[in-house]
Length: 125
Image (cartoon, rainbow, N blue to C red; front, side, top):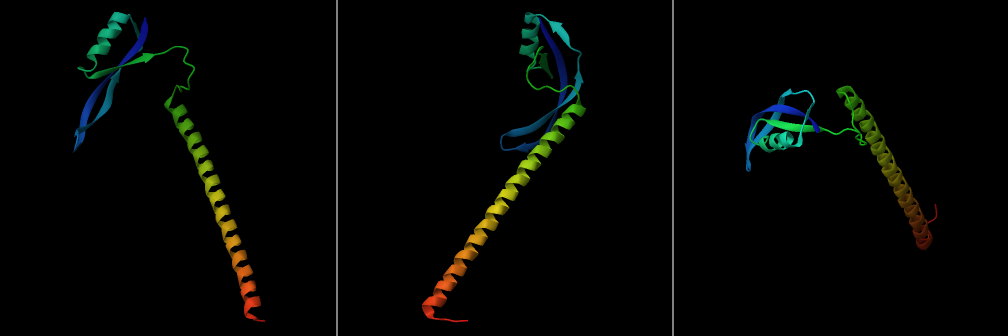
């Protein structure tokens, strides 16, 4: 037995491109979770291409990361965005530090060259 839900949808033509119509699917209805036998699942799965519905299957004891509510997804996105922002800022700071070090090295090299040229040309201040 499989536990499934069926999502009915509407297709909306958005625009036309070189490959054909661009369509978006908008869910219009979702059924409750229902247990079906394998034969029924196979038939529903086969005809979903012709119909205006898609089947989703409930997988019990899922060990992967799955959230239950939209609010949990919002919080997850907020945490992930903060993490990405932190990584981006660290990279920017590291790049800035490299630029500062490179500039300091260039200035030191130019000062050393200036002193060498003063000695070679006999310029006294």
